[in-house]
Length: 257
Image 1 (cartoon, rainbow, N blue to C red):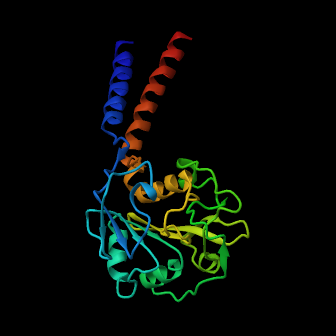
Image 2: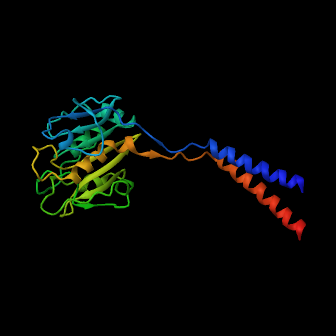
Image 3: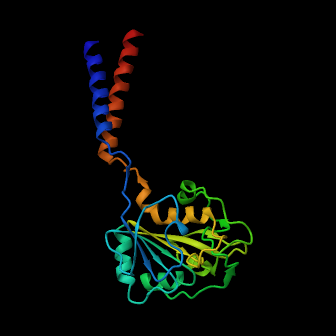
């Protein structure tokens, strides 16, 4: 009986030690800089909320200190594909604006998509009017209300690009069904294809929800938590410990019976 009790204590202690050594969720720190590739009338608190503060810089060559690269309609796209791909692989975020989502995608991946049909009210709001794939982790983590009718941004449909690229996930659309927002995970980073005129001069129509949405895009990789999956050996040890305890309990029951 003493040996069985010792076995139970040993197995329980073994499992506890393994559990303590298993990695816990970790959050990555936000990088200090926000880079605009092309001009933007809207910056700082007029563009994003619930993230930062950032040092805003201009340029099209992001570095290890760049939290996100925002590419507007006047940004230089040609010749930057390789650098942007490397930036994404290293954990960066890229966010596009009106009229450039397909061009940016083509530059990075060597495709040849053209702009789809134009859509929207051109009221500048970045937050879509319809959520697509509403159970996607992005929407679960960011339950932001959709933009009301008549206040949507405008751009060019991403439907053809999304249909032709299995790695691209559609996340938002306007009321006509035109896909306006999609994402591709690349390496440790995220490419957000956003067709919305968010850089235009600040009118009252740019809602707080659009600011929260832009903040979520900018900080998504920096604030996301990752829960490392225990290795097979860790799970194996835990299962083995559990079996040892179970076996000891069975022996005890039989002896008492």
